[in-house]
Image (cartoon, rainbow, N blue to C red; front, side, top):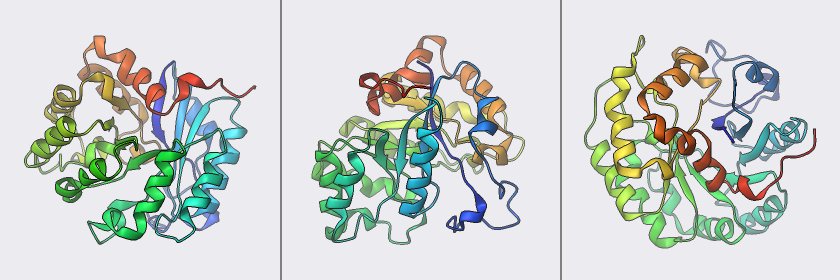
Length: 277
């Protein structure tokens, strides 16, 4: 199967997208009908949270159930620091469409928040109930985030957007060294997504090549998955230009894994049948 491993939908009137200023070009409703015409041969997607509320997770699960099998998994949100987080995570994990959780670490001022003692029971519950952890991080997190692999060795982790390297500023180091270390010292995965929004306006595939080549060399295709990051990608040219650039930059032999196989394995989609249309 071909998988878009990272996209969103939202309804602005729901009012819980705290990051979405009214003047942002993507500050309008986006639903699956907008996405379907762009997908081409893609037959399954992973729908990822964009708000720090359980209400949005409910909204995404409802969207997935009504998607006629397109949305194969939902990465939602939970308050991982709440005292009752383990029980709430157990309840969420009972939904077959729920495949993971994502705290918005990039927006939390404390770089070490995910390592706080009060968060660890929730992460342990995620691992024991088969949920994956999407790490929405930036380069400032890279020196410390690997400690999670030591504390929770059975928790499956994927680094969203390759930790958002500063491509516009051509900042390759120390991002590259940190990513190489994580690839070497942990079993974690990485999403080839969100890169064009970190590049300068008018980006060309050549601007992305050093970063994609490095990810491929360090993680290998079996631990990389492609995501559109739609509709955020509309801020940097849109779905089709990013998809075309990725196809050109990734060797054809890696396409079966990076464009579907890795995501299906990581999120457990291979063991699931799509819901009936």
